[in-house]
Image (tube, rainbow, N blue to C red; front, side):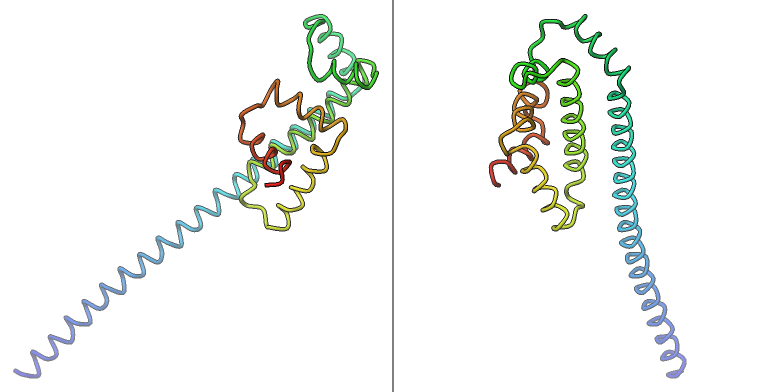
Length: 175
């Protein structure tokens, strides 16, 4: 009988050990699945961001085609002939025609949209990629010139208070 109780005890101990190991395996599996879901979400976010960026580039390229740009300028002049903003600033300060100013503004908007896209995924960039992006922002918007001026006018009219502006301002101020 002693042998029988001892054998029963070993089976109970093995059963309990099996249950504990099973629970640990389930816990590890859940951690693995949570990690996979997190990576899948990040990848989906990057893919959506890239698709938006590509669509944006296509729209800007379309807007820069001569006939479309000319129609856009005529429409702008018809609906907002007295508006003051980036287009008028470019025409006054740089003595550009409306078409030339619209082209410069479209390129600026393309750069700005690129910045918006990157800032939305800034946390997934490597340190080197982020440093490269920050240099791009400083070179594009901090130095005196067209894009620095446009940035100041643009944020006053369109984007003041946004997280992207806060990020860019931080870069421009050296933070």
